[in-house]
Amino acid sequence: MTKKITVIRGDGIGPEIMDATLHVLEALGAGLSYEEVDAGLVALEKHGELLPQATLDSIRRNGVALKSPLTTPVGEGFSSINVALRRHFDLYANVRPAKSFPNTRSRFPSGVDLITVRENTEGAYIGEGQAISEDGEVATLTQKITRKGSERIVRYAFDLARATGRKKVTAVHKANILKTTSGLFLKVAREVATQYPEIEFNEMIVDNTCMQLVMRPEQFDIIVTTNLFGDIISDLCAGLVGGLGLAPGANIGKDAAIFEAVHGSAPDIAGKGIANPCALLLGAAQMLDHIGQPQNAERLRKAIIATLEARDSLTPDLGGTGTTMGFAKAIASRV
Ligand code: NAI
Ligand code: MG
Image (cartoon, rainbow, N blue to C red; front, side, top):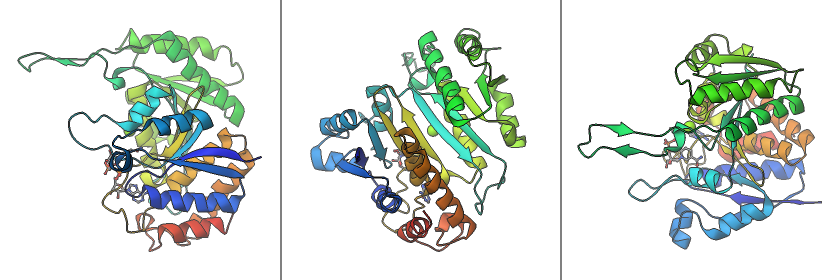
């Protein structure tokens, strides 16, 4: 049976890395069909809006989307399309794996294999109650953490550990200082942890976590944390394993999930055919896991690793001279 996926080709390097990704998915024989819809700058030009209703309808219908980066125009009245999508579909779990790959410029060519599970819908990050006094001297912001929001994200992290055979969940917080908000998150995390006795539970203060990640990243397995801490920590983790060209992310809710690369539309290299397609490909691997095709996900990841190991057709960001499609073909030949 073919599973239908919403495909958003996006802006800048988006169409190039999407072509490359769909080429590899074809070689995998994953039995997918695609419904292409627009979002971002290209949608603004074609339909007069950044996030057309038809795009939202498609994601709701199919429940799964593979999305290239979108350019949010700079200027008054434009807010992030990615944030809008997360909010619209209540995509509460932002799941970002970081795993060492061979032949990258990473300082940790082996030993890192962790997943950051970031709460995606509440906390300081969403900018609730932002205000600035009339004289411009005082700025304020409300930070709201709920039991429901904390419980579902911590549960997601433990369920992910169970499903993937991972052994440890670390809750990252600042409850020593932010006693109410971070305190509630930590309290709920401790409660949920008791329901998963076979999985080790660990708690760590966020500033120490940053140092530990840089000094000894191999000690981490799954990290679960609130929105703003997760935003920062997951980029730190991408940096541990070779940077943006290799960092995928999933935004997962009850009724829909969107899989993407973490990087943006890279206008500086758009149209040149040299963007690294790996981040979106790894996002596609997360998508295959999500739709019940873990074997295909594993085949895809192994083909990427084998291609990196062989240094076959690598793009310039990885020190090669290859093209986006050439790299994709090298990966496709190994699936
Ligand atoms: P960016 O991630 O697009 O680029 C940063 C640097 O990394 C650039 O030098 C770029 O060439 C390089 N780079 C990024 N992806 C690459 C790849 N696959 N292969 C090789 N090199 C790569 O970040 P920037 O420049 O801050 O943002 C550009 C646009 O992207 C903005 O309009 C921003 O709003 C949008 N953006 C969209 C995101 C999304 O849709 N998920 C996420 C981040 C930014
Ligand atoms: Mg970020």
